Amino acid sequence: MSFEWPWQYNFPPFFTLQPNVDTRQKQLAAWCSLVLSYCRHRKLYTVDVLEVQESPVFNNKKIERKLSVEAIQVVFEELRKKGNLEWMDKNKTRCLIMWRRPEEWGKLIYQWVSKNGMVNSVFTLYELSNGEDTENEEFHGLEDWMLLRSLQALHAEGKAEVITLDDGKGVKFF
Amino acid sequence: MDRFMWTNGLLEMNETLVIQQRGVRLYDGDEKVTFCGVFRQHAKSSGIGKSAKIVIHLHPAPANKEPGPFQQSKFSYIKLSFKEHGQIEFYRRLMEEMTQKRWENTPVSQPISTTAGLKAGRTRAVGIVGIERKLEEKRKETDKNISEAFEDLSKLMEKAKEMVELSKSIASKIKDKQGDITEDETIRFKSYLLSMGIADPVTRETHGSGTHYHMQLARQLGDMLQAPLELLSPEDLVNACKMFESLKLPLRLRVFDSGVMVVQLQSHNEEEMIASALDNVSEKGSLTAEEFAKLLGLSVLLAKERLLLAEKMGHLCRDDSVEGLRFYPNLF
Image (cartoon, rainbow over all chains, first blue to last red; front, side, top):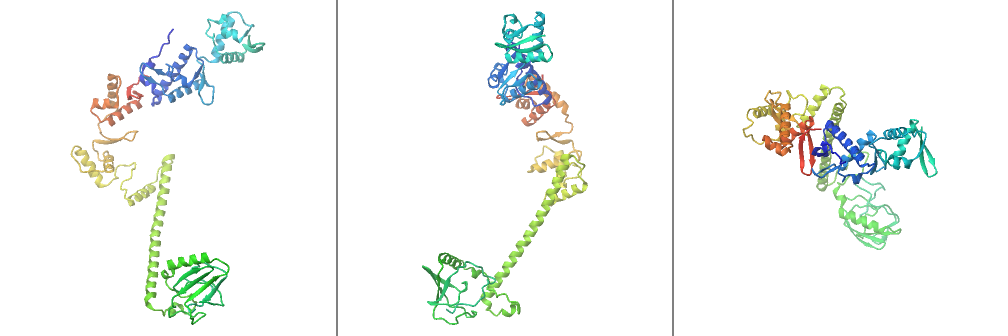
């Protein structure tokens, strides 16, 4: 399924950081939403800032407009404030994009676990993210760092516990 | 050597110590002199330097030379023998002094005497001394003038300091919005500015302030804006324009955020202008300042100000790219 661009994407002013404060707020909200849905669509969990400048999301070749580096940083800062982005380094060159927050992932995973009557079973992390049984699930292909955070969120709710197995980590659901 | 003069070891009024050297033997001509002291310039002389000895040829002493160790001498030169070296420096200083002839610049003065006063001693010839005295007086006069001038300068500095204090206090009051600037301060400030030639400072009350000239000018501007005026300085124009309201003229001076100042009709209605700007832009999809200016027959500067105002109000948004700055209706 091809990605559906929002109307702003073809509106040239969208690619200029607006000086009017109110206008800017709306503009940034639209950008955050676009970035998250794009990453979700492409299953991107990490983003390299330099690379992403050339990505279609910030670079609309059709109208010949691209978002400046400064503006991209502003958008990323917004995402960080909302809890959807985490910098991986001090220099802010790479970041984790959480188009779904750990708690939300945890909820999805637990739903699948209980739906299949597998509470009280133990799974390896690999089984969860890459096993055959989870192929149709949204969390299939979830990267380890995110999977762990999701399970930790569940742990906080008393619904799971991460354990160490012979060949890696695993999780027990309650 | 009959050119020596007795003196005490102290420096006299117009003498300065150039160089002091120990262990110098004085020769009257070729005869060793038994006394010793600091050698000082008094008479004209020319010198020839030799190793370890300096020979100084002296002109005959003036007739009124005070007594010295030798009343008469068959020699017209003296020798200085430097037993403890130092002759090079001594010679150098000697030559320096000879070239500068510093003693000729300072008037010959009496040794300071406690009694009898100076008048009693003034038996010298009027000629040179007279000239020298005049020079001295002139010098004193110059000195006085300079210190007076500096007095003015220091008074000016005082005033300037006061002004700086005052302006600082006003500035900080404005900044902190702490109470009003007192009447007294305003008056003081204005009087300072007036004394500096600034007739009309920018104050909040425009009514009643400003010179007669500006008022007349404002009237003229109001009546016949089209008529060619003589050369006018921008400051005068602005000052005149500031008075439109107080003179009840149908024009207004308007300052934009960017600092651009315009004269506009009193009847000018801002909201209408912005609404019509939005219409224009929507109709065309988007507009640059130049295109807008052409459309309305305005100057580009005015057109841009209007577009910026509409953007500020949230009616328009901007597209800033390599193609230029373009305004769109705000669809966000």
